[in-house]
Length: 364
Ligand code: ATP
Ligand code: MG
Image 1 (spheres, rainbow, N blue to C red):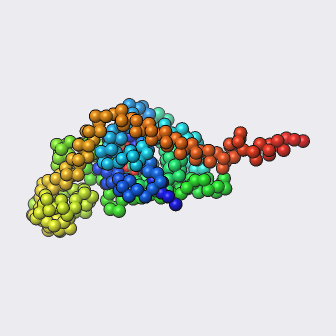
Image 2 (tube, protein in one colour):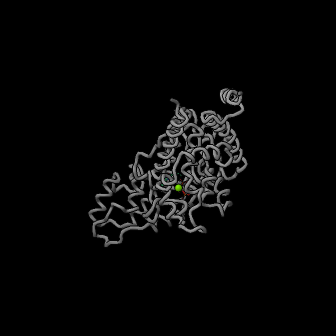
Image 3 (cartoon, rainbow, N blue to C red):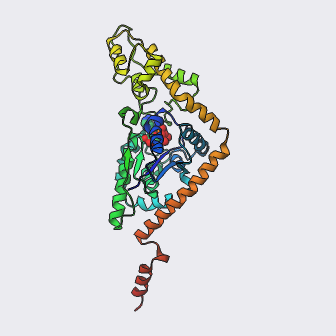
């Protein structure tokens, strides 16, 4: 089977280091491997509106910001179809049919949705309760994935429950309507476990636009330095043994530092294993480690930031890429919707079997 790869991001803010190691890097690798029929990247604005309905300007602005981040990390419009979710006609209709295949208790059990409800402070009353659209977003994500018959989904691990939900929808649909129209997908997680859920600079929850504990790909040099310096660490006297487990500075080094960084910026050590064992013995201050992390991140982010600035000078081009991509995405998704409706037998006007059956039924 030829691979169809689909990923996406919510336009709720600029993209951050969590996106970079969790998903963007893998997308660039996949793009360059060229072993796919389609590589589609969807900017999930309709999903972003499920918890930002009162702030559409934020969503509109971030469509462009996210697109700039994509191009800056090296995703190439010649190889990737970029599209905007709200512009794909078939998606809400597919969502509507899939909603009937999933029970309310099943939707409410989704652990990612549960923790996001808590995080966003939705409660149980009618005024500030969780929007219906928000608890439904995993089902609309199933529409995004199946509309393109995607089989590979590069994501961070918070998306696993969504991929599982999609597989369930696919199985139910194919079983109930006795068809093989929908394709089962699987997630592609980063090899390095830390990268599949990079924590925020506060060392707590995952780095997330909605929490604001982020280092953004677009951050300037001084901002990155400031954020690294203010990262939480465990206070101790210099000569005391340092703690590596759960230490966010080391978590980031695990995600970003390689041996050549050591050679360049910290030649006293060959690699991270050596640095960690020295740190555990004591005598190494956090200031020096943070300086190293800053050097590593500055090296990684400088070319991205510079490319981003270049692309930001041509916004009409960005919109043209999105328009063309959305047109192509519409063609692909319309075809799936047609197949879905035909599998369900609700393609009344072109379904000879149905037409004849109804004539027959009413003929005497
Ligand atoms: P929001 O707070 O609006 O939900 P987000 O920061 O969680 O934003 P999304 O747009 O929801 O970002 O996620 C896009 C993709 O990036 C998903 O595949 C998700 O798994 C991945 N991702 C997001 N945050 C991280 C992170 N901290 N570590 C690894 N992957 C991440
Ligand atoms: Mg998210």
